[in-house]
Amino acid sequence: MENIIQEQCEDTCGGTSNIHVLQEQLISEQTASSLAEIFKALGDPTRLKIIHTLLKHELCVHDIVQVLEMGQSAVSHQLRYLRNLRIVKRRKVGKTVFYSLDDEHIEQIFVQMLQHVKHS
Image 1 (cartoon, one colour):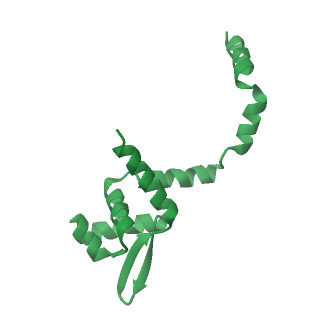
Image 2 (cartoon, rainbow, N blue to C red; image 1 turned 120 degrees about the vertical axis):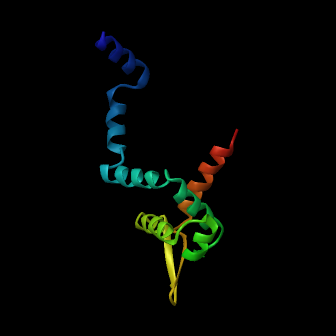
Image 3 (cartoon, rainbow, N blue to C red; image 1 turned 180 degrees about the vertical axis):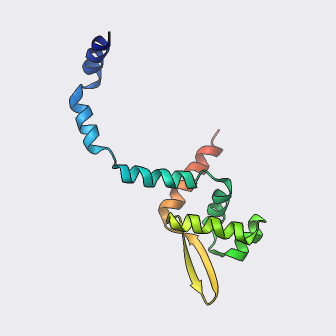
């Protein structure tokens, strides 16, 4: 029975040559792990709120704390996590640290997924 299914698949799917090509083009284990970490980070509502807030403006920790109505320690922890994954970056001016999104890729991912969620 398994051989019949395999033969049918080879007839309609292109056979094993496509499998080898796809295997050669498969992302590396390290890339897959890094990507999974980013999606894991995006799986937290607090981190998503921080990212959404930073879409509009570069902000200091104090301002993010005020917008989210959370404790400074909790916000700082989340910002550190996001910074380690290069989702946000920081800029220091004197003693004040300002946070913004690391690059346009993060903004694009967030905006696309937000539009997807809001699409009915």
